[in-house]
Amino acid sequence: MEGARDRMDQLVSLCKRRGFIYPGSELYGGFANSWDYGPYGVELKRNIRDAWWSRFVHGRADVYGLETPIIMNPKAWEASGHLETFTDPLVDCKKCKHRFRADQLVDAEEEKTLDLSGIRCPNCGGELTDIRQFNLMFKTFVGVTEDASSAAFLRPETAGGMFVAWKNVRDSLHRRLPFGIAQIGKAFRNEITPGNFIFRTREFEQMEIEYFVHPSKASEAFDMWLQEMKSWVADVLHLSSSRVVYKDIPREELAHYSARTVDIEYRYPFGQKELYGLANRTDYDLSRHQDASGEDLRYLDPDTNERFLPYVIEPTWGADRSVLAVLLEHLDIDEAKTAEGEKEPRMVLRLPPRLAPVQAAILPLQKKEPLVAAATELAATLRGAGWSVEYDETGSIGKRYRRQDEIGTPWCITVDPQTADDHTATIRDRDAMSQERVALRDIPSWIADKVGRRD
Ligand code: GAP
Image (tube, rainbow, N blue to C red; front, side, top):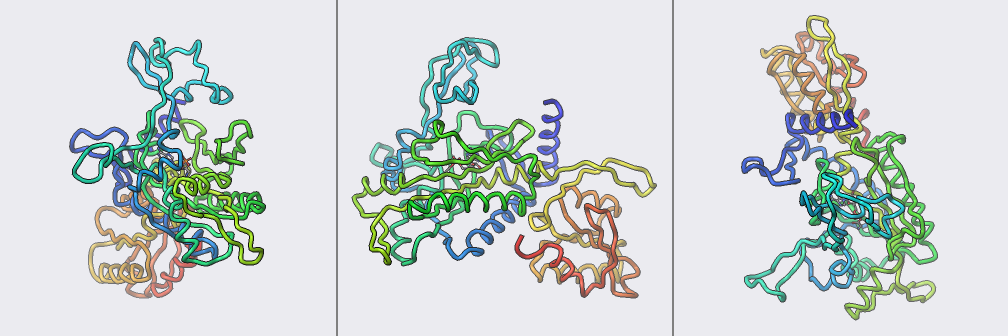
């Protein structure tokens, strides 16, 4: 566990030092469990979101995008059951006042019964209070008065907006089932035990799909989405199969609305915990909204004239947990040679090129003409081709390489005196540490080939 903690500490400090993720509100002493995404963190998260959208919305003929508000009519959360049951069991230690989630104090098999008899405070051994149910919804007020009639809630998941908009999407698209709606956006939960860096925060981002199918096709659609999620994990995030666990939740432990759930877990340094989820939510959500709104939310099959409430398969991805898993997976420490030929430890983020905040760094070997002009022009050409590029002419070349290794830049392109003679530059590969001379005019297509457009 010591090594695991070291790894988290290494990552958290690298993220701050290099501008991926900073503690939130640090100027005012911080704000527990809130984080700012810095210039490179923003790019990494954006690349993950873009890859997701390109794969699951643009890349498929049966999924459409949607954006719904964070603050919705509170009746939606009443209908969905969130106001009543979106709770976590809370206990306090009577002695040291530490607060815990009761389900995290018992073994997985005992989570349903939550029998805490014989369990003492893990912090000080003190006696625990009885369990209280704590609602995770953040409450706010809309308008100038702060009373029950103006109370509203920040959404705890993006899914709710998609169920409420289902009728409009159904009516405007006029398309046959199955099809899905996708949404990326912030969600808010007043978590009792946030922590582990960006793993569990109170404000986070989700990427979710609600896929509507005929009930008889739900199980087939579930299998299809499980394959899609596996492919995302392996082909886009490049997470090692030894660190990802697909856990079919036993029938007796399923949530009341679910016919099948697979938890996708990752072996983080702090334990094996949820990364993503996939659920067959049956017609639970649509039937609740149909009952509460009085609107007919059924789908009319134009071929069979059958009218029915579709089942919903819901694959859900956390954007921040994707960032965390990708950073942990690809953070590596190896050795590099210094200018004097000595070996020194090198911290390197072996990010998949498509996800890397910077795809190529352009480094003139010396800060003088004609090197600077050639390097500046190459940087502008690559930017024009749509790549994220950094130009750096300061410090020794070794230091510049190290910096790019730490932010995960796959290729450093060095412009040197030979460039003026033969119009070539050296491309250094972050992982192979190999050097290759490539004609300047071929570099944009060289990078495009390496990154690949789809993944
Ligand atoms: N609509 C289904 C739903 O929201 P969930 O398992 O509660 O399911 C989906 O959340 C995903 O959102 C999780 O798998 C995780 O990646 C992410 N997530 C949930 N709570 C989070 C939190 N407090 N901080 C960061 N990510 C969170």
